[in-house]
Image 1: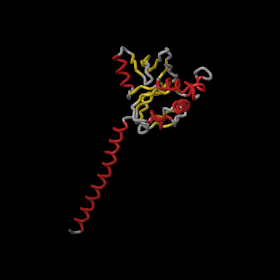
Image 2: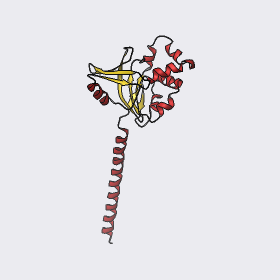
Image 3: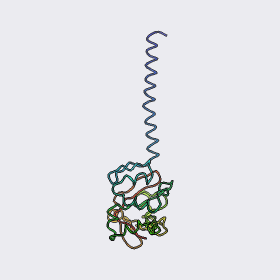
Length: 197
């Protein structure tokens, strides 16, 4: 092999190596995007990563410190860290603060764990439902999707004037302020009111 042939061979080898390097990350990126099936969304000043579970993400949100404290007090951390999937309607700190004075403190007491668990599981629906799924369910239900919660009672999701709302059994209406926060074990919808079974 003469010098020119050797140079061509090296150049060909390098170009194949660079082509491989360029293709592998693209293939990996395509694979990762299909796995995560969602974008990273900012909630409460923190990134909510689709690769992390509900608890791993929620603990970083400055808007959900009360919810996280309640989940811990109710002993639901392991459940919401599990495989699920779950759809969680997550009230903000402001939503909890809007409850009658002393309600949250009372619910966080060990003797009220059963009541707290009932309220929290009323915010959880088994399965993963995105806005598209809610839209489909609402369409099938003449504009309203009645969803059975893990607690056992139902909530009603509807789109009013282009905005999604969640109505509890007592008639309280919460607005969905941030939809489709995709998690590795489900999806979170941020809401502005605490739902009551």
